[in-house]
Image 1 (cartoon, rainbow, N blue to C red):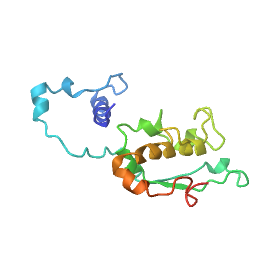
Image 2: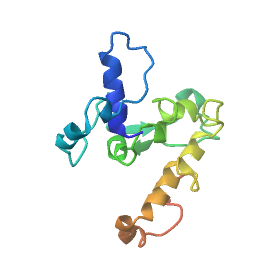
Image 3: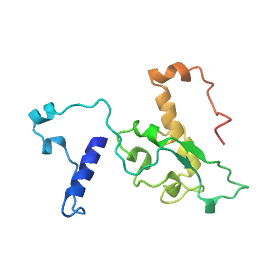
Image 4: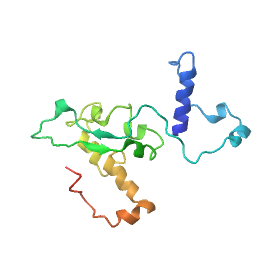
Length: 161
């Protein structure tokens, strides 16, 4: 579902007398007829919907879970704001909830994360849901190929475990 439709759905739910009332997705045509839709100015860039989300975070393991002898994962800097525009919905990365990755994707894997541990959730190259998998796919785009074709393929020693 496009981000604008999600935003409209949220706004309509907040405006209702009973916000818990079930509602389907809101479509522009529900409020605007075709002529009115054509009159609406198109914006080149959709403004960021503020939901108290961070601009940047450190993806890290749960402190209670870390055993320094067997699990060595340093915090990973993640520019959340820069990644928001690459998907049409937050659910591409967040799946079922807006929680941090490490809540479901634990070091050892948990039922909530479908037993995909934190390391695999980031580094599975064949999965578009994983950080590395998504980056691999996006690097094939023509606008990225110029730089990425010159980069050495494989594990980047400075960034990976």
